[in-house]
Image 1: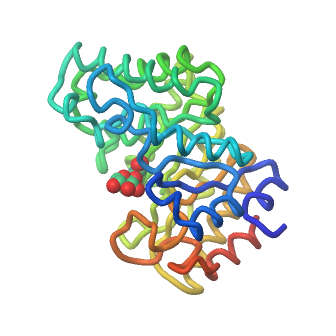
Image 2: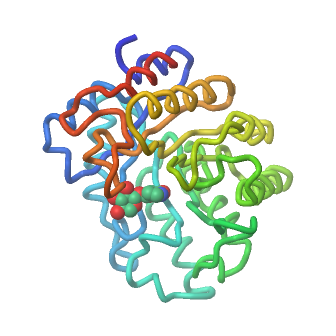
Length: 301
Ligand code: XIL
């Protein structure tokens, strides 16, 4: 196959990218996105601050722009993200208690309801675990009560019964890390108690502080064995040249080795589109040329 999406489809998987509405008029960018990828995530446009800038007043302009472009071009869409401690609208940031809990529920109903029937998978809750210790991250949402995550999932299920519902986080790739174990235990508990969770997203932003771990495949398989799909949701890998390319190859090989790893998304198109202030973590260079990392990825699919 000659594109990432078509190559991934050979094994029933998808290959996606994050898209920014502000770059859609860049023809090099949008042409690569259209040619190579068959799953699209809005990089910022479906987040809480973007979709509910004033309480109870939803704005789907940019989210819809990305979603409609994707659907019109035969792609599927990952929704990102319904509940998160970051990129909350100003009105929500200092809320607490039952007021915030209800605002979260209203937000999920508003956004998941708007996109009902159009989303492949939703990141229902993003980054709820602390970086060390294996427990929950402190946040205004966490302080509303430990059950906020399951409430978010139950609300999302009712709002869009057709979407797969994912928990998404970073630094959950290394099986030996406490954060990984914390999320694993939550998912295990949710499955045991019938909380509606269908998938776990591994952001997989790999860099010197959190490098690709040799036990990545083990992590993906162990989560899959809980009865959820696993998805690589925001892949980028610090570095360049052959070293970077071989790490991309390993990530793809690990996903393909796990039956329930059903898709990979890279977090941007060209290196110059990356959220990383510096570095070259993606598959295309700033001119839109395929990098060694692209070739290794395509070969591995
Ligand atoms: C990032 C975007 O790429 C940036 O444009 C924005 O300024 C900040 O957020 N984890 C996530 C993503 O789940 O939503 C983040 O995206 C990157 C880290």
